Every structure is written in C-alpha cells, then in structure tokens.
Image (cartoon, rainbow, N blue to C red; front, side, top):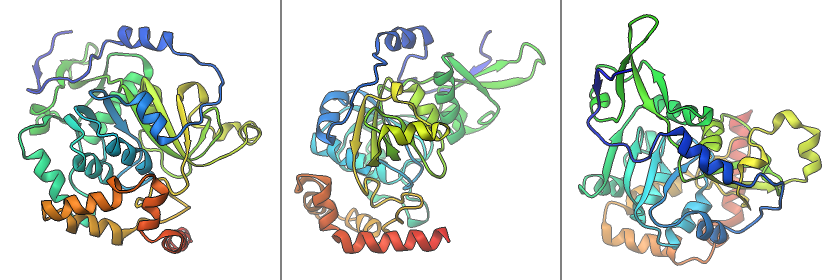
Length: 327
C-alpha cells in the first residue's frame, strides 16, 4: 500500500508491532505485590530520555503526585505524549523535562487561559514537535493496544494539522477512498491515576476513561497511582469493574488526593484558586522560580505540598464542591 501524501514531521517512536511484541514477550505477568513510593517508581521506570504518556483528561484524574516527583528527580530529554494535557503539561514545562512532543492539546488550561511558561517553552525553538488531533492520538494508542502498526482515520485530511503531523494518506483497497494512516505508538512508560487499585494493580475508574484503557495496553511500563488501595477480595467480587488488569501494571502507589489541584470525579473538585496562582506566577520567570521552590522543589513529598496549599481544610472544601456538582 503506497502513501499518496504524508505529513512533514518525524515520528519519535518505531511503529513496528513485532519490535513491541518482542518487548512485551519478556515482561513478567506475575501477580505480585507492586506497591512502591513515587520516588521508587520514578527512579525505576522513568529514566532520562524515555517517552512518557500521562493519563486523564485536562485537569481531570491526572497523576499530579508522580509528575511532581519527576520534577524533583530533574528528569531531562523526555519525549511526551500530549493528549488533552493541561496542568500535567504545565508541570513538565516548568521542569524543562522534555525535548520532543507529540501534541494535540497543550499549553492551554481550557477556560482558565494559557500557561505563560509552557508557551515560552514551546516558542523557544528547543522542542521537536509533531502535531495531531486528539482523536488521532487516541487512534494511535488503540492501534498499539491491538498490536498493529497503524490505524485508519478520516480526520486531519486537507488540514494544516495533517501537514504538521507524521501521518500518511492511503487509498482504501475496497472503495478507493482516501484515508489518513496514523502510526501506532508504544510509550516507554505511562502514568495513570485511578480511584481504586489492589496491591497487584487491578484498577477501578469512576467516570470517563478517555483513552486510558488503550494507553494502559500500549505502554511498555505502567505506573498506577490510586486514591486508595483496596483488598483483592473486593476486586474479585466486582470483576466487571476492573478496567485495567494487574498484568499490565508495573507499579502501584497509594496517593490520596493524588490528582490535586485537578479534579477527581465523585471525590473532589478542581482547586481553581491554586491553578489561578500558577498562571499568575508564570507571568514573571523570576517569581515563578520562587513559586516552584515553595510548592515543588522545597517540599519532600506530595503530602507536604498539600499542606502548603491549604491542607485538610482546603481538601474538605473541594470534596464538598464535588458532591454539590455530583448532585
């Protein structure tokens, strides 16, 4: 099947499914205790230069605690899968952690405005960029989860996004119609925040899952952070609620309020005041350095960060707000 046209930007990862199969064939699928801390997980699974993907959607169900640890570990030259990324991208930009990105939605924090610092980073000319649509990135993960080298989509055709992507135009062998072929992607590591998990990595998610189920199956290594750990008996009693099974997971971290200042559906609302503080602090690079020292580099753990943001009193307010929204 010959390509009739193609985007101008390079691919950052090899879409060969047999190369991916070789890797996954060597992975253990043992049902073992995978509990560890954020520090241990980052040290073991997120080295400099790897290609990272983050679960969640916008500021919804993001693994903030693990991302903070990536910054404190001073990870550099990462690749990043920018699929519906808001505060997570803002954080990684603050740490200057990446040098190449597959992007669909970044820099913007939705109705809150644009991240001044993330914009500076992306306009610096130091970052390699390949552009896609949100759906195209989801399709790339689905292709990887299915073990094939590409997915066929119809969006992006005839757009500048296609020109700035790494997609190709192909002809359907059945109808002769044109479609866009987007390459599968197997991130080196993914981090997904969930509502509940057991010590082996079986996970429950409430609310929208976005592309996280495909991401969990595409990632070579998978770190799970969870609001709470539950007994395996509870997993077995509700087998249909396990959306990410243990054999995909490499690390499990219990982090209550681990999506803060993002939203955790049915548990706590977004801290809009704190996100506004981020956007304001980023306007002045010198002030922003002080801001980062206070909230990220100057704390020893995520719990200390939560205390500096208002502690239990603030978290209870966000719990009440989410309950009101839920009703």
